Image 1 (cartoon, one colour):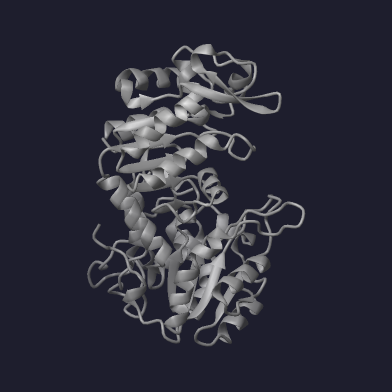
Image 2: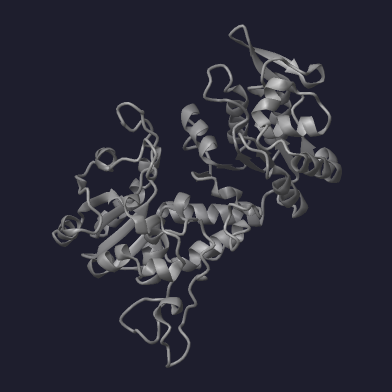
Length: 450
């Protein structure tokens, strides 16, 4: 991949105020609201330390959950975790662009770190708008005069059309942080030219769009083989004619439509043995894990994981692969005794020594639980890796990984507009370039990002 976006090497940050957007949205314990896993916080530390070393004034903007959720909280506890990992003071103000926040920014010295309040407190953050609309939001207009640069290290949230993510890059010099750059390069290398053989593992709790995903990755030769686990594996077994039992079918009922079942049959007919299904599953009987061969189903108990035979079969495929991608766990890994499928397949990905990618919040959560959080080439927190296929939830301009990479790259490479020579703005914002076209056509103004 040719680097077509700015990174930390491209600007002089000395004595400059840098707005760093990060994704430190962390799981919490419900009663105490304490952070129980700060892996996302740890991952942005390298970018912050580098900016501190470059004598920047680091202003951090982040979110935690969203309005209406029990874990929608201020970021004071995040600041304490960040301070501990940086081994450096982190000032926290529970304000975003009011007088308290502005005064705190104005009083910063080189090397200082300031964390602002939860940006999703602002209605404008989640308002539906195009890029130009977000660039004209109160958040951007109020903070822009106090800032010199914008750095995005929030790849896990970068697919969202929100003003803290797409507004600032439209009106000021912008670049990627170290985490963002790493994931952009990894995505491009994995999905543009995957090493062969390449295997995709699709599991998790939803299967409605799995047929489209399979047709895409096999049809475009992104994958040589697709392994189905979790509810997707159960659903495809059912589509093939297996009676999986009422308990397992009940879990699938919301997406168990005739259309989805027929789509599953169609892709199995089209790609045959390139799609691998579980040969056995694990259920809970008398409080213990029990193995049931698919040929011996139906089972009175719901399938909670793939079985021993399936684990060994799938591990052999993974170990012989040079590229492996997992989106969705193989079973209910949170339940003691039923983490084997997910854990063993992840371990095989690591031991294969090939390129390993995991995608989706539950998959990442499983990796964290098993202590594999530093073992994968790419961590994808929000499931955006699944953007390789044309799903309804994915932005229409981001129907493949390369378009995702291009989308983010464009926002982080805004060149100087010929009309407003003192500002780094895109043509979408300026619209006044009477002396010739702007040197950069910014991202589309289409409000297709969710």
